[in-house]
Image 1 (cartoon, rainbow, N blue to C red):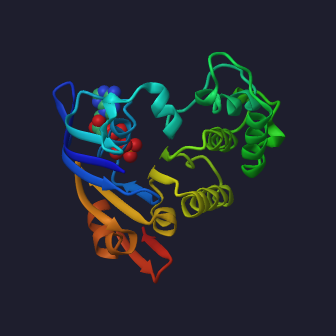
Image 2 (cartoon, helix red, strand yellow):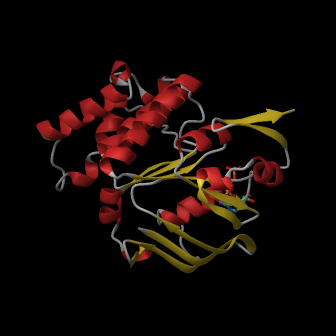
Length: 251
Ligand SMILES: Nc1ncnc2c1ncn2[C@@H]1O[C@H](COP(=O)(O)OP(=O)(O)OP(=O)(O)O)[C@@H](O)[C@H]1O
């Protein structure tokens, strides 16, 4: 569904990504993990078309990402960025409603169906209670749930997440990840998630791609890639594995 072939990218003269090749299948939950500065966000930004000027090929459904119109991309992709802060005092309801914008003709108002979709997304993410609160006056974890609700209203084919759960408490993280995983299983949603939490990546991903110093050092089924020795090597840590559950990091 997404094909990356021989992709390299530089910021000014600094090489960030080096000859990356990657196939991302439809209906899978892929996590991108790796140390700080390894190029995860840069790769995600290239996949969404937010960054360009790369060498190599990036295609979505057989067509170069740069050949898509913005409207087409916004009808296919939902993106939750690491730095997705909104400084304007919209209400949470207004923010979630913006998720329906790619489906509105010209400046049409939301239809009853759009409103139902918005209501359902806020209900499932437990954000209805903030509907009339200003987005500038809710907590970081609450804000991230509002952004998930907005992404859900887009009914995306591909959901890009960049540390989208980082401010949530563990219970909310698991609820949101279960909700997203259900969409992968029932609606064939493709998820590409940059995540630092190794245990959440292990629990929820079908596949994992590991970046280190701008290169893909592994990509494959989660349990094949996330072995104790490999994780210890990539992150330079001491770690034990709890059979089929995750990792215990040794300090
Ligand atoms: N706008 C920018 N201009 C110049 N260099 C940048 C820019 N954004 C990122 N970089 C550099 O590119 C490299 C990769 O950054 P990137 O954000 O992709 O890494 P990451 O793996 O997502 O890191 P983290 O885990 O810390 O979020 C870093 O060395 C960073 O300093």
